[in-house]
Image (cartoon, rainbow, N blue to C red; front, side, top):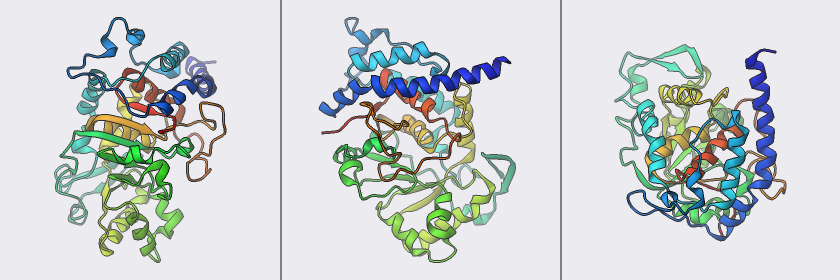
Length: 364
């Protein structure tokens, strides 16, 4: 058996270990966060509990590839049980700096006229052999510059769709955030658990085919569905695969034709490719990064304080009780497409270092 195949088997075995171990070991975090929904903030200058030599968390390990180091995972789980969460601006900066150098979300997350010259060619990040020639027609659809010029935002909430949000009562806490990110047009009939505020909503173009018949017939239902979020930025990966560009353009035209306050914007495939390369070099192997992981990374660059809700890739909660896959249904994802347990391990590492807060329990 070759080294690469052996390593692959070890990685999959560790995924299983992570899933089982987290389901039991994170129950303490669940209970702690259920009693105290508001995080403790470190004092200005980055000096707080993390630097106190009397604090048990001072021995926290540096972030490394957890999929290849079971001891690292177990060590972090023990810290989750014993350590209160404390914001660490220095740890956040250690992630933000290399992300800014490679990717620069505030400028490059979206296609704009500033970063997409007339006559250039857009490379599809999911089909590198495919290219799209930039013409006037496309430029007319793009904003002049990035809408994220106001970043960094003080307080952000990134709301996943995990079933762990059901009956969480996190809605009011989420709505208090300055900037709220949601994914794939989730149903908004769960305000008590997920809130109503939406600054950014992503949409996989496959949704247009699955729910709205590719906008080939009646288009109003799509405009009305987007309208339930108010006036968000609707982010569409229109240039990830060649077959989805045309229907993505139709989504933009539909919102304009029906006078929607929402703005359809196209994610920059160069940003997505650079982000994938950034994490590939750090050991994260996936056919494609999930949209949640993409936007969490963008938020790490653009937010001073960041909390994740609904990010939980396992079928049982930390106390072992069964969960639906989403808070609104139990439709499983396509297997083998994303590396969700590995992505979750990265969130856990960020939480332990104080770069972001990973909320898993009830909010009140």
